[in-house]
Length: 186
Image 1 (cartoon, rainbow, N blue to C red):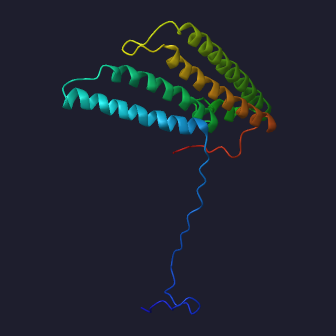
Image 2 (image 1 turned 90 degrees about the vertical axis):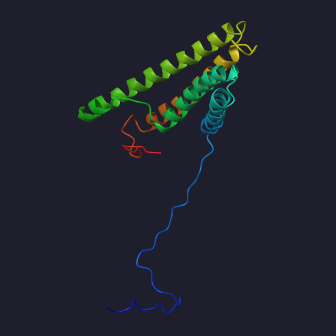
């Protein structure tokens, strides 16, 4: 068996396989950054709850309540991330069997229903935030409107992303997105 010849220009052994990583571009989306911070805040509060209950044998009363509220915030802010990525659950199998014109009409109707549903969520979010100003949290004497304000903020982020998705779909004439991955794994 012969030894691979040396490359005279580099003076090194030649590589059989060369791998180059593509440049990774991280885009700073507000919902991703907020979700990241709130998620790790939630993880810290849950760890503190576990530590105080099982290690110190004296549980902090506020940790259970705050972790519940942080989970609500992560859920609604994460909804905006899912809206931007197009990963909300949906049934697309029927659209694959429809003729092109009916599939486009179906996508338009789905976009309109989604837009109005999220707009209604925003309206209810504002309404409940205003009404909960007089009620306080159970353990901490803060108004519940803080909790529901975070939920409403997540709904408005979803609405913003939904409007951008609808405009993108309108530019394509509600044709199927050619850049959409069939399976998204993060």
